Amino acid sequence: MNRFDEFALEEAVRIGEEIPGTEIEAISVGPGRVVSTLRKALERGAAAGTHILVEEERYMSPFETASLIASYAGTGHYDLIIAGVMAEDDMHCQVGQMIAAILEIRCATSVIHRGTIREETSVYIEREIEEGQRLCMEVALPAVITVQSGINRPRYPSLSNVLRAKNQEIRTIDANDLWDDDGRDQLISMRRPEASAKGVFLEGGSNEKARALIRILHERALI
Amino acid sequence: MMEDKIAIIAELSRGGFTRATHEVISFARELGSACAHSEIIIIPGKNIRGLAEEIARTSGIDVIGIEAETLDLYSAEPFKSAILDVLKDINPAYVCLPHSAMGFDLAPGIAVDLGAACITAVEEIHEDKKRICFSKSMWGGKIRAELVSMTQRAVLTVLPGAWTASVEEAFIAGSVRMVKANLALGASEITLMEAPGERESELPGADVIVSAGRGIGKEENLEMIRKLAGIFSRGAVGASRSVCDLGWLGHKHQIGFTGKTVSPGLYIACGISGAIQHISGMKDSQMVIAINIDPHAPIFNIADYCIVEDLTEFIPALLELVEISR
Image 1 (cartoon, each protein chain N blue to C red):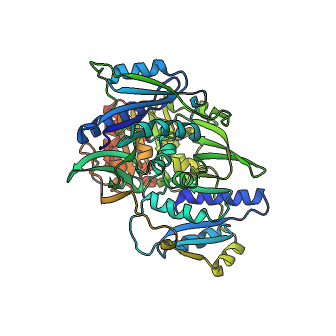
Image 2: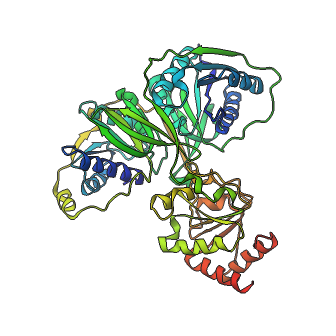
Image 3: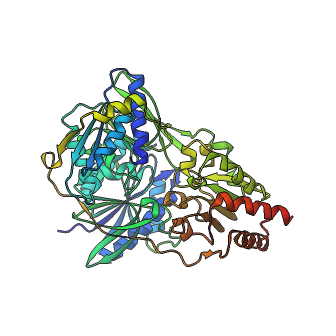
């Protein structure tokens, strides 16, 4: 599971503990392999798992992913949709905001603290912004929030949840039944970034490197 | 008719433009010369006429200031609505924002509403077969990906630090037009606060920062990081975001995009892979030494001295040698 999503799921489980009767559903878009991620979500406390199946293994633009989730979520009545602030792999920071825009509901990103949910009408959140500052606000529900890492400490799965998750059915929905527009951007290449030429790799054994480093620190009068 | 504008959404903080905004202007100029479009700056805010005139004078770019009481501190609803009103009027080919907490909050929603592509955290642009390709980091900086827009319009966020703010003043000032945002009153209340523990940080005054990343393996290994910082007269311990998230160190130690920006005389990165979010907070250090067991770690791309070693063995050996040489 994407690390940021672990924080998102944990936040959902905490809301479930605060407000009895909350139903937590984990949703993932992708090929068959994402089922194992959904099962991990069940182990960590989600009550249900929904797999939006995209057959082929390919780059999905955030807009495609968001459209599929929004199209599915539009049929349910979710009070809160929680996502990670970004995916660890493609690092776009877009899906949550796009879901909110498509569904025309509120959105707050980079949430580092969540407070009380008031009578299912609003949630207090603090957004992490630059220079060690936070923006604090009430967000009217329904809403999408994307959470920053560190908002909580994700727990380990409990034995009872692990056993439950083993045999629980995960609902599969064919992406073609939800939405069939094209993505708006295309990935055309991926490569390793070039290394900068300026760096010097210290050579030799561990001891020689340590000696070389101390010499450098002395030369620069750092020690 | 083809749209021919590049709109820049300016960001304000503490009564002035953020550095990232000036960098977006540099980015937009490069994009503008690649596609022969002209730039326009849009500033949402409260009491911003002076700032609008200032940036029009220094940049030479035409400016539209959007004023409203509710545009004082950033929140998605009023900002998005005010900006979209102006954008629908200008009909730009590109909308550029900084990849900041404001920029990435706004950009995807604006793109959805404009029917535009959205490409975030752009680090480089170049032309290929008459298309403009946008490069960005993926997998924590291990991969550089190129994306192209498939639509007539695109909303872009620009990674802070990827372009340099221009210091030259324009010969001819841009025009300034002020508009009042047509916003419903009674927007939700927003307050600004300092993150807990922010004031206690030792990082700003340190000459040498020794930083720990997830590669230190376990919390107990922080002890050697502290000892290493201790050999310098004004040394301090820094950390990557993941180390703080694990609770090994408080967030006041965090360096990077969402933490502190530092520029000490010496920065020693221990077990830090070098994700772009971290690098943006320390790349102006005068000298960088990186210790990492992975020779492909992106941190080595910006380090002056690179040490490929298991730091749990290397640092104790180093400390011992320092002890002897004293």
